Length: 313
Image 1 (spheres, rainbow, N blue to C red):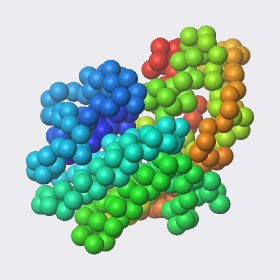
Image 2: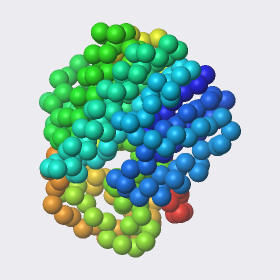
Image 3: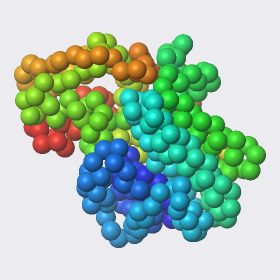
């Protein structure tokens, strides 16, 4: 099988590429290596991807020849996009529209013309729910984004559903709930916390720390992608990918303190506009239809991430 991974130099994209190549698949990876965070870290991710069976294309989805990229491709994993709630306000919003909405629409247009395509798996986000009214939140609950980032992720998800309904493009959208683990983006909380703890620096926490998140280990997210790509599902299907352990940021810090074997220096700053109070997803649908189950609990996942950043755990 030949697969295309967009955003292949990113956290989930590179992990997905490694798993697929280990299984003997051929992988074409595309990434424009944007500077949302240090492109050098993305190049390090690329260096972890075995060369045999892997082709890298350093292009932007908004300008690339997508028909050529999709030639002979059976499955697309669309991981590319502009991440982050904090930067999605103000003038930066245009970047989010370009990277998350326009690029997805252009990819879907090319997917309509791709004769070999069997499945397009889109990396959506729990940010589409905003401050949900019900927990655990199911796919049938009405999305209500609380940030411009969430708006663009939902818009792209809606495009996937529309192309499935109108043109039979075989899309599946996966709503990721806070992905963590080795290789996590440097701006994300666990990465920041662990690096600060290992360096003996203060840990900066936005808000009270009572925010609750449903964290999902990266290996489990990769498995969800593979199941979504290979199981029969109706075009336009949407699934939560939720780790099943809702825990507050303060509780995470307690776990990290235990891993470090000492009290951590925590400093609190202002809450971030667009940051939701809680996330927590129901995995009933993906469990029932795809047989997916989270396998890594938060403490085990944090220990793995701690070790990956040079700590003993």
